[in-house]
Image 1 (cartoon, rainbow, N blue to C red):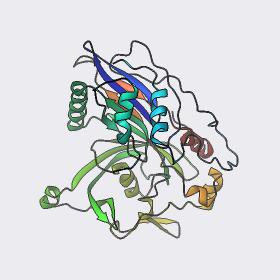
Image 2 (image 1 turned 90 degrees about the vertical axis):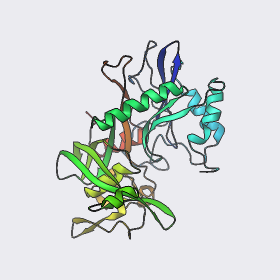
Image 3 (image 1 turned 120 degrees about the horizontal axis):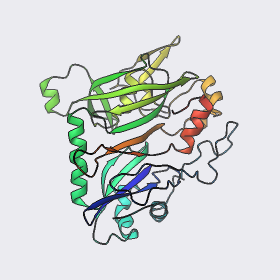
Length: 336
């Protein structure tokens, strides 16, 4: 994921990007020195060993992923080393858990980093951090105001197993979190009552647009207009097109005689995504490798407020991870 640090300095708010992430490979994008309240990624250097390959992959099926047993020190070093321009669960190793070490490593002193906006744990893409409470507050107000006005600020790219019936449209669904077999899962709710809403059911909305199709898969642009856990994954399942690498919700889509249908969410347990033989061949993966396929959901674009209230929002882009780009190449899909 690309991590962006924000800091207040002499009245100016500036950003510095990192290409890093939770089990994601590292690369670096350069940014202009006079960046004010946003930076657009212009160049991306692939990490060593991440060259795209279309043939058999041996022991490296997903270029760009970091090892699962990454230590805290290695994660902090990776985040710090990837900074291009900087002005301005208990016991589980996550980005949140290493923020204190990252703050010290970046020389922020007593200033604590906080997450302003981030993709999901299994997703790749942008993470926005701030060491300035005033800047963080301004950013949150911008995101909240945009959401109320139904102006999307985040754009995701997803590869789906299946092609949506419509080329673009809206996905609306009421969702709730339910504790099933010791795991919190997002479950759709049909015709929620006022009591359901008071008890935590939320009406959610996303825009989608199919960018390209091939080999029974699609490259889809997703823009959430609400925020809910696993919203985009569940929305694509409701379209009978689960995100590639979704080993949590894809089992809710069943197939009989080539026809897809939804299985009951409450009684369908998470399991490794199963891909048909033709798709496995196209991706040059074995079934055991496909069981480790990363989630192909990437926070590609984020809009940030300009310096003044009437300024046009500034666009921040994160390049696709190497394994995501390789999948597009294998499927003959292009991000335009």
